[in-house]
Image (cartoon, rainbow, N blue to C red):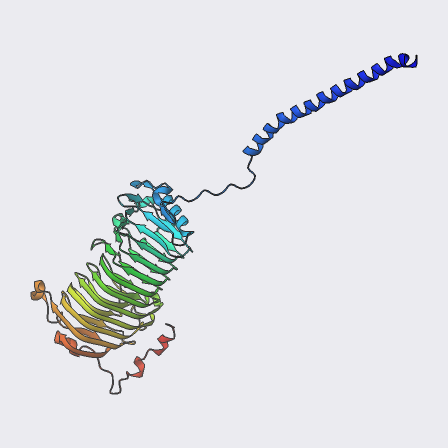
Length: 459
């Protein structure tokens, strides 16, 4: 009887359990379904959201360490501005040991004034096979960049090479006054090599080294018209340990100009002309101190120039020029092959002053050829004469085409207040008695000794 009475209660309990179990199952499945819908959404979000800084884009490179300026956006059509491409390629090469900037052949790249700055990893090369041209219009040059076109600054172990050309398009500048634009300049740099390239038509100096050490120039060509003013070929200032060799220089000013602070310079196997010859100076302008020493110029040919080998200083200057050797030099139709001028003046009139840069130990040996105005002109200061000047094996004859125009005075050597020795053969014979002799003991009068000048130049 009890079992029968409790059957409805038991049935109700079992039913409740079954319903609860069904609800639980539905809830779990619902949760599972909810998670499945969220997961894909979460994955898409994490894929699109960066988890850190993006990796820098690699520099475009033909192969490891070589950076072609075309890969940096250069057009090479001679009209488009390719300055940014050149700077970009330089910065990329600068960061790599042995990095190379390539300027490909067969194209002309117009580049405005730029500074390519170091320091870089060592052994950086700029390979110039095409042509770089400066802006044709002067107005295209920023006023802040009127001193140089291509400026290398604070670089070391850098080589500029190739069969290409730098055309500075200076012809629009040559009729202007007060400009100082150089085509290619190295400032405060070391172990620099420039070889095989051509540099043409600079507004001013073609190749300049400022405050640098360890320079090699080999097999380059520099060219601008004879009437282009102040277009020095190579200009050295405060630069040491230099070799310039096997190059051809034709310009409107000095083929090589050596300025104050320069020492240990070797120039050989150079063809110079037209131009103004190989010059030390001008030095000592505005009573400044000038120091130049240990210069060797040998095995060169000079033709159709204003001077051959020349030292020029301003009156009133201070300092020392010493230990210079000029040897094995062939001159052809040079106005005055041998010049020392301590009265240099580039205007109609200059102030007379008693001070002068001291000049000593200057050797001229085996200088032969033809002149058009005078064979030797050595004009030294009245108060600070030139000392230890040697004239050995000097054979200079008037150019055949103007022999009839030569006056007796023009055919004679001129020496003023200069001491040293001469040794034959000597042509013309007036060279033999051009220099004053020291006294019997080989010393000069005390008033001629410029020892005080030496202290100004700790070379």
